[in-house]
Amino acid sequence: MTDTRNYTASEILAVLSSRQLTDGQVVFAGVGIPLLAATLAQRLDCPGLTILFEGGVVGAFVEPGKLPPSTNDQRCTKRANMVLGSADVLLLLQRGYVDVGFMGGAQIDQFGNLNSSFIGDPAHPKTRLPGTGGGNDISSLTNMIVAMKHEKRRFVEQVDFITSPGFIRGGRSRAESGLPMGGMFRVITELAVFGFDDTDRRIKVLALNPGVSREEVQDNTGFDLTFDDQLGTTEPPTEKELATLRMLDPERLFIG
Amino acid sequence: MTTGVEPYVQLREKLSKRDRSLREKVMSLEEATKFVRDGDTVGIGGSTMSRTPMALIWQLIRDRRKELSCSRCIISTDGDLLFGSGVSNHIETSWFAQGILWGLSKVMRHNVESGGARYDEWSHMAMGMRYRAGGMGVPFLPIRSMLGSDVERIRPEAKEIDCPFTGERLLLVPALNPEVALIHVQRCDAYGNAQVDGLQFMDIDLALAANRVILTTERIVSNDQIRRAPDQTKIPFFCVDAVVEVPYGSAPHECFGVYEPMLAHMDAYVRQVNKDPVGAMQDYLEKYFYEPASWNKYLELIGMEEVLEASRRGRSIYND
Image 1 (cartoon, rainbow over the protein chains, first blue to last red):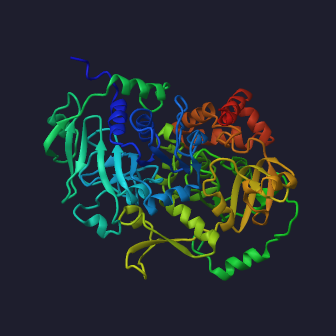
Image 2 (cartoon, each protein chain N blue to C red):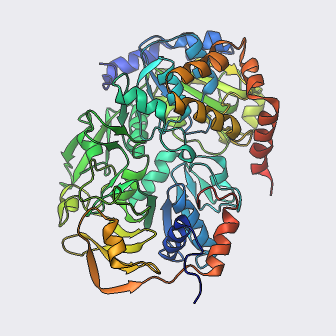
Image 3 (spheres, helix red, strand yellow):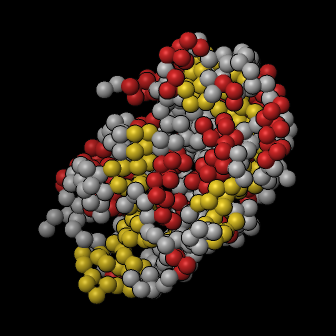
C-alpha cells in the first residue's frame, strides 16, 4: 500500500481538476488552483491545451516558479499566442470559442450556483465578498469545472446570492433565464468529484477520492447528497503529477 | 443623476467644447488633477495590480477631493485607498479586494458593511461593454451574461429585453461615460499619443468614453518616435487633456515590461490595514500619501531595494 495522503488538499484539487481537461480544448481559467491545474494539464497530457485569462491572454504558457498573482499580471502573457483587451477575451466566451470555464468557488449550492459576493442579506451584508470578476460571464456562457475546498459552510442547499449561475433552480430554469448554453459540468473537491443530473440538474457524487467514505462527504455537506449508481473512486495523484505540480509552484503559492 | 446614461447631444456638446487641437499638454501631477472636480465620475485604467494610475490617485488623495464616483474593471488596493481616504464613496467594478493572495479586503468590507460607501457590482464583461458603449456613442450594448443571476437582480440599471430579431432574452447594460479617465501608460508624446505594451485591459474604450482624459506615462517620447511605430499607439492624442511624466507611476502595482508589483510593500500594507481598516489606514495615508514632499519621496519610502527588484522582474518579461 502506498500512502494515499502524501499530498495536500490543494494538491489533490489541482491534480483531479487537471485530469478533467482534454488535449485540444480551449479553457478559460481563473487565478489560483484553476490556473495551476490548467498549466499542469498542459505540461502532462494536454500540450495542445489553449489557456485563456480574463486579463486578455490567449494561449498562455505559464512558466514554472513564475505563477502570476492575478490573471491580470504580465506573467500571464509570457509565451502566449495573443494579447487582447479584457472585454474582447470575455467576448470569445459569448461567441462560443471556449470549451471549458475553470474557476474556484467560495460557496456552492445543490444546483451548482456559486456565491462570491455576499454572506447574508445583500442589502445589509454580514460579509461583503470580492464579487464576480469574470466568474459570472464564464459560468453564463460555457461549460464549467469548479475546484473548491469541501466544507459544510461552503456546500449549502441554497446560496445567499447567485454570483455565477449554475443551473439556477434546476430543471430548465437556466435556459429559461436567458442562458441557453453552458452550465455546470464538474465540481472537484478534496473529498470527491461531482457531476449534475441531466434532468433535475441537481449535484451528485460521481466518485470518491482515495480513502474518503460516503459519510465523510455527506458530513461535510449542508444538504442531502445523491450518489451516482456507478459511484467510482478516483485514482490518487501519481508521483509524476505531484512532482510536476510542485515544480510549477515551488513557493507553494497556491498548493498550500 | 451621476451614474445615468448621458443624452447623446449632451455628450457631443461636451466633446465639441474640448480643445482637441494638436498641442502640448505636459504638466505636473498637481496641475493635472485640477481636471477632476468634487463629485465627478472617474474611470480608472488598468486592472487589479496592473498599470494602476497610482500617482494620480495619490495626488487626488493629497488634494482631498470629495465624493468621487469611481469605476474600474477590477479594483485592488487603489479602491481601499479611495474609500479609506474619503475621496470616493462609490465604486462600480466587478471585483474588489486587495488581490487573490490576501483574501478579503477589510478596508472594503469596513466601508461597505458600515454603509459608509457603496460597491456596485457588475460582471467583468458588463463593465467592458459599458465602457465600450460609452466609447461608441451609443446608450447601451446587449450582453448574454448576468441573466438569471442575483448580480442582475441587484442592478436595476441593466434592462432585460426580448431581441427584436430573434426573440432571445438579452441584457442591456448602460453606457459608462466617466467625466474623467485616469490612465497610466509606458510612453506617450507631449500631445498624448499613447503607446501601451502588453495587457491593454479596457483602457482604449475608457479613453474614448470619458469626457476628459488624464494620462500619466513612464516616459515622454518624441512625436517622431511615436510615428515610427504607429501600430503601437492605442490612445489618440485628441482624447487626451493632460500628460504627466511619472516614472514608476503605478507603484506599488505593476507596469508591464517596466516593473512587477512591489509585493513586500503590498504584503506590509495588507497586514497593516486589515488589522485596523480605519486607524491603520490613516497611518498609512499619513506616511505614504500626505507627508512625502513629492512622488519621488513616496518611492523613496517604498525603498530602493524593492523598486529595483520589481524592475528586475518587470523587465525580465522580455528575456527569452
